[in-house]
Image 1 (cartoon, rainbow, N blue to C red):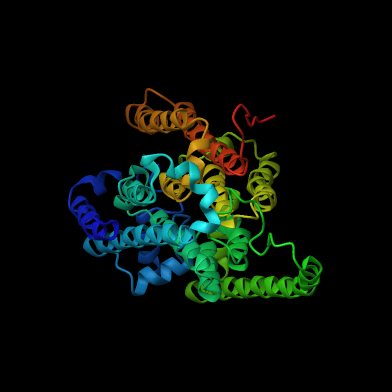
Image 2 (image 1 turned 90 degrees about the vertical axis):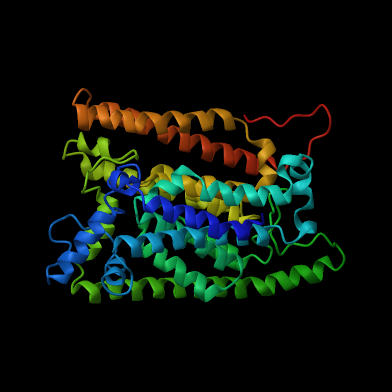
Length: 442
């Protein structure tokens, strides 16, 4: 069965699961729906807004005002309507992943060296990698369960992959608009602003450059080198100006959406209640991240310092990742999405699920992954441990918050192992070694 033909079948399976009692039991699970992605909180905000009450007043509704406006007007909140919407979002994400794979594989010449290793293993043939990419998303519990819980993290995932697809197709205006919308509803996604703009500017992206780490505009032809050098000197100011205009366009979209939020709510209170919550961790509801327990136990005197540290920490990775993978900005975006899943204040399983689902787009790195089995076992261990620790603490009362936080630390370690392994594999793909040689990490 062709991958695209399997999408309706798997969407039908999702709708069938929506008809069971599973969504009712998992709708409030902290692993699937955080304080800023909970469907129940979204419905509460829509209800308050319909009664003429500021939805942010009670501290329950923390979503973007754009989502509030959409679900108050055109998007459904009913069981059937929301099931259809969330299933359609998963279908859109799966289609975008298939399209991204085809775009990234469109030029054998550009990535021939990168695929030598992948094509030498029958399991990693292009057709099988495409199938793996599709089914890894559609059947992955990390993406399936948040969808059944109607977590708005599914919307974030769909918009993220759609933004990457538009950028890879060089549709600058739509890509920047989608990026601004993504940043508006999910503030941590600002980490991928730089690589998305790099994808738009790189003529070779999204074709793999991991095995040939040179900018897309470079040429190996040495004839007329001086003339080409002059052309590059002339073109550099043009590229800088084009990049500046791109930033201005993105900032304009962000500003328009922010003002749209002010119109929808009637005030600017949403900025502090929505974006501010992500930065200040004002709602310490347990989740599968690293922030909640730390700031629950934190003395108020030290809280501002550590809030600044935790918020600024993810930002320091943008420049080194983008510079190190400037020859493949799509891979830089992939790495930064893994960092978001690991370090954001309100993560869910969907964030790690997105990173895992994007992994098959880079088959040239498979051979160089150093510890895939321990990483898988860490995820398996945390997936079993987090529900158990939560049950012992919140249901039976025989445990405490330390149990749950220890389980979330294992989950964080699993995400860290994925990101570190992906960084190493992406860098290692650039080295060709002879028999008897070995690349080591110092």
